[in-house]
Image 1 (cartoon, one colour):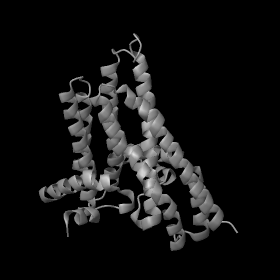
Image 2 (cartoon, rainbow, N blue to C red):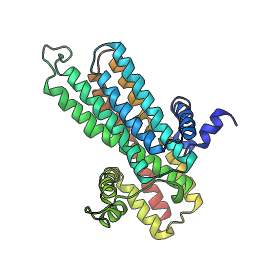
Image 3 (cartoon, rainbow, N blue to C red):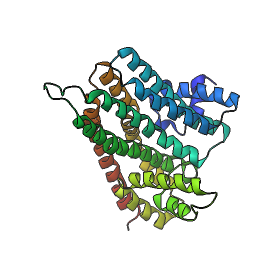
Image 4 (cartoon, rainbow, N blue to C red):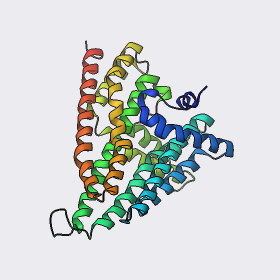
Length: 311
């Protein structure tokens, strides 16, 4: 088998990976995963290293020196390779854990928290373009809106739509489509004052994250209730194929609003010395992509509900 064939064998599905992901992120990630497998490193340890490296990249964006910025860009790319490697390593070794999945989802949020923090610190004393007025608290408000409001929802829904697609493509047993209700049920079965306190803690945050995903997809949940009532867990293959045909074109959009396009624009804005423009891009263009994607997916779910669960 060629290198690319070996990389494809470690992917959840080629439907969710475009050429950029395959060659630029997944292939380097696979090579790191092979090294970590040989060294006996656990996937969770790789995730933790990714968090530290990605968070450290933010500090290099505080400087206006392009050389320092390039180091930060390199660190963020390196962190993303490790973020790819942890999942590939888990599938290669069978060492899959819930905490690994949770930390993996948490990883990007930590990176960008520090990136936004240092970008805001860098810009607060600079003038707003075409004015003599400094950004001051304004850049913090813009950064908070772009990061806490827009970024969080964009990445959450992109991840959720990939998992929904994998659910219909591969079946429930091979997908990672969790529900807030089930997570809370498991969390409530544990006690804080016990050896399970840490497990309960990260389930609490995982439930909040999953709830933020579910809040954006009302028609999907209506569809799933109808399908489960009619078919149980055994959704017919023709229905699954029908769903995937319309869901598949949305997968490139999930990559646009999660990492690839986001980071490309971030690097360009920092390189040209206009990092504030990245916040505008995130709050407008990426939000428009998110709304478009949700609209198409919700209409798909409404059609499936009407066609397969009624009558």
